[in-house]
Length: 229
Image (cartoon, rainbow, N blue to C red; front, side, top):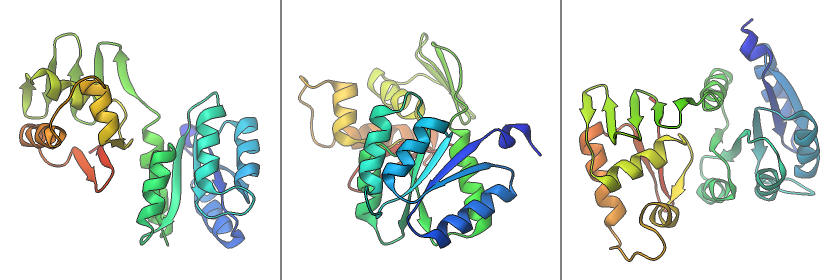
């Protein structure tokens, strides 16, 4: 058994015992340590005590729902675990609400065991930031040199205009995190700068032209996220 997996704790929070049993069995079989809770309040208490690496939350639960629990976890936990929501494929509103509450991703249900294990491994890989110092960022097959303002991809080095570089840096340093359009405008252009409505779209299009279409994913109605490929 991989020691890294053996020492990884996952917290599952759902009010349906059948789902907890299924998820727990599938993950324990792979060697993960699994904790369970039946509602948001119980999940928060366990998370504070055990510091799991990954928390998987259902949205609709009694006592405290997943959205509120996620907000509390992000506000009160000293560590920053990966948080993913369990949502039905048709629940676009839940996915958006979850991401806005601070979740890193979502898992669509029903989900097959093999796909669950693969998804969990992908989520946990985000904890391993490939950042060797404050000037160099590695993410997927991209290297970002903050000091030299150079990006190196599989096709070679790129010298990007300042705003394109800053936008790529913002997305790539937190792969999987969805940045809303308002967040991007505030962080890259500043609150005091007035820019056109399609400014972000133009910069995203130019980055995709230079890096390929696989790295930056559009979350319709929300914003953008960086894919690890």
